[in-house]
Amino acid sequence: MRRYVLGTFALLASTGFILSSCGGSSSAQTPFERLGGEQGIRKVVSDAVPCLATDPNIGVFFRGLSADSLERIQLCLTKQLCAAAGGPCTYPTTITYTSPVDGVQRTYTCRPMRASHQGMLGPGGKGIANGDLDSFKACVQKSMQQNGVPSDLQQAVLNILESQRNDVVDDRNK
Amino acid sequence: MRKTALSLMLVFGLSSLTFAEMMHKEKTLYQRLGGYDAISAVVKDLAVRLVTDKQLGIYFKGLSNDSKNKLIAHLTDFVCSATGGPCIYTGRDMKTAHEGLGISDSDWNRFVELTKETLNKFRVPPKEQQEFLQAVAPLKSVIVEKK
Ligand code: HEM
Ligand code: HEM
Image (cartoon, rainbow over all chains, first blue to last red; front, side, top):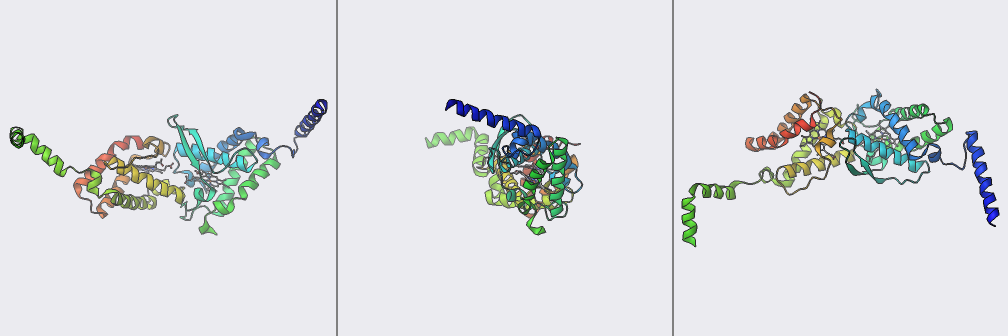
């Protein structure tokens, strides 16, 4: 029995190895794992921020976020993607983070998407438009390309973002 | 006993007068502004001016309704507490809340102007207006990042 279990383990392990060494879309691994866990997701999120903040369409939405708030929303977005990509996260969730301003630990409750996005003003006074979500996705995609994320995995992440369009785009633009 | 108190008051005539004056007049700025409800109305009026202002509105374009409501609640607690009211402010300290926004001297002056517009609308007397602005003045060096 013991030997049987061990043998199965070895078989599973080698299969996993073969699959992942093909670089293909292993069904054994979640998108979360393939992205490199929370750390990998955080990297993709951080690297998207310069694009988001300077984008001619959507940069203005991020103008009023303090350094502390910008840190929070990156951590919240990471948790959100972690949860949606099959990782061990829940969302909404209360996070503990170290503020980049004074190094002090604080807590913050990451809110659901409607509470986070409905009712902004944005450049035209009507909040986030459909095209703004497209710009947002383009920045995330650019960051994934920079980080060498395989294209099928990029598509999986973009699908996760797309699936939230109705909550993120302002109701006044529908 | 009564006599002692009286003669004491005569001896320390000046200071007992001040004491009496304190007992009688020295209400907190919070009380003189009209308490929580009045401060809450002032903050809401100021918030509308800030969010729709040509110069300062840019800072609030990416705040959701939920965030704006929280900001108003925090600002109300902050002002209540800073004017001697019974509130405890639980938001971030002013440096953490504003660092990175790049608020300029001219932004600050505009903020003061809008605050005065609101205080005038609510017919807050000049003395209380001045005290209010004096109470927030020390925050300038913490909030303003750009000359
Ligand atoms: C599916 C796409 C999106 C996701 C998953 C997402 C996710 C998030 C998350 C997790 C937060 C933090 C929530 C919190 O603070 O409680 C947030 C905040 C924010 N997002 Fe998004 N977002 C998306 C699209 C967009 C778009 C298209 C824009 C603008 C063009 C945008 C602008 C913002 C801004 C400005 C904040 C801060 C709001 C505030 O503090 O009031 N987001 N987002
Ligand atoms: C030019 C003047 C000012 C501007 C443009 C400004 C702008 C802002 C912005 C954009 C935020 C939201 C930041 C974020 O969530 O990332 C904020 C937060 C806040 N501000 Fe100001 N502010 C100014 C002056 C003041 C003053 C004088 C006070 C106090 C009397 C004040 C009290 C607060 C409070 C209490 C918060 C909320 C902090 C929190 O949510 O933890 N601000 N301010």
